Length: 402
Image 1 (cartoon, rainbow, N blue to C red):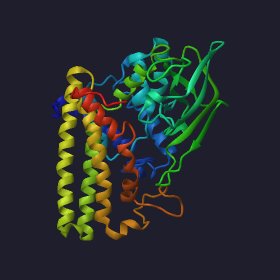
Image 2: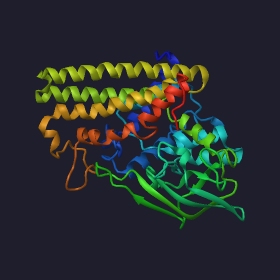
Image 3: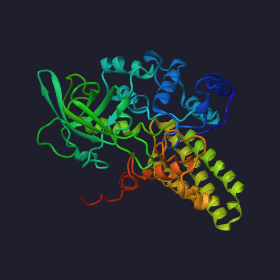
Image 4: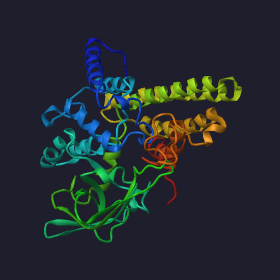
């Protein structure tokens, strides 16, 4: 992937940068550089409003076809947008499952009716989505799904429980992997349903995290209903569609993520120099190793983008990248505590604590990173699952005994 900017890309970057400067000068200005790890230093309502602001500027669906409301940017333009976004220190984005996951899934597997019903609403910011995958007994092992759906008089009746449903309390819709074939097991008999959240059969219970936030939820379906035609990819093809959704999770935004990590790392260097921890040879050695690993991460993401540019799909570097960045950022949280020293164990304030840790126990950015980053090696495919994927699907090693 060649990230050098030709005149056309430079002009596009100027357009992005100008728009961000204009729209971050008003009500969203105070949230620059916030809403990153854990998202809890910005109210979710503000992040949702910012998504709609981006939508009005035409920046939500930059990779979607123009015929359905997107901007139809090239891969290089998408990378430039994400880099310019991070350079501007624009607010961290909410996990917009509609834009990043469901929209691409509908374009790949959905019917024309489903695409035109839902994608324009997603790209306008009018409808928010959440993901109904994980269950108490089906986390990384998604094939163990127990939620079931039965077709009755032209409507699906859904019963079951999902967990770790990000921002379910704000979502209008959820895409649900459910078992539609009675008695089926594992990957067979699953379907991918689109279910409205605002109905009596859906109950949401927030999960309070160790940071004090409630981004994640338990979601219960008790005779929840959805229309018969709101099955993506056909009845019984849920596993294929669900795996397709996960493949869309890693793409052009990864280089922007790496730049965000670099900004975070530079801030940690500055903190170490301010408090004198830079003079500790152990701390310097740890920071040096973190820098080296961050560079490795950048080169791996460039390799992944090269595969995406050539083949249209991420290569094995995507799985390697998830494994690597999750471990790197978790270690980054630990390193932040090493730099903070004993003060890292005491609640403090960095000026951006409105929602982290509760009203009586505000945690600062470094503390939030330390606590929240523990989840990186679990969600989106745990480290153990990623190693299995790399071993079995990339290296061709024998499958793990079941």
